[in-house]
Image (cartoon, rainbow, N blue to C red; front, side, top):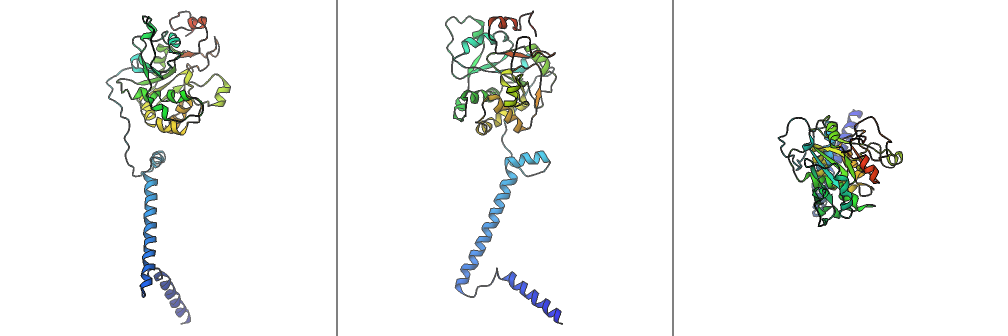
Length: 326
């Protein structure tokens, strides 16, 4: 009997504690207390709901769900659409779009390098910071190489060292938004980069252009690799992006430029953005960031070289020179 009475008293005590929050007011002042408690409870429920909604419907949550297989309700985002491609068969030079970074101030001199390998069948543009004035005697074939001025939107991004690096990194955005048909690969390079286009076509043909690929070479300089990264395509050596990756990169580029303003070069900005997308770096030994005469030459097809310093090297390394090494 004593134990039962104790249990009953405990139950009554718990009931009183539970009802103390939702008591029935007996005095007018108690109505204000009751209203305040309900307001606090309502605000708490709404706040928790908003936090959960923001967490599970944010872009980071969509990436997390993709990575770990979680099925979370997501709000669809507008993506850059891939134009229909009617091309079939193996990759050829018409499927490659060259996006060359140049500057109006140096274009007249640097055009001699591009004229070594640019043919009528080559697709692409040399992207400049401003219009260039072509000399009156424009019969020279190098002045027939197509140029375009980069979209001025790059000027709104901050930078820590090289302002030109921001514009050059955004060239992939300039190139992709042209929406040209039958482009399988976007190949980036500098205005003093010389490409061996036949070898480049042969190498890119090994890869499925409908998948996301980031192909290039790191630096022959250990100091440069340590300073920047080993798993990064150095821009001077050129690199190739498949069209699906170019689409994703173009969509994400502006946000990446905002986040990675403190990097020195354009290639490091691009590599970091591609890393966010989740595409690994694929190394091809034919891309050379540092070109030393008859040095650092692996037994693989030469795809390009850069930084020619004198006429002898220019003639020796020319793709049209049958005695050259390529």
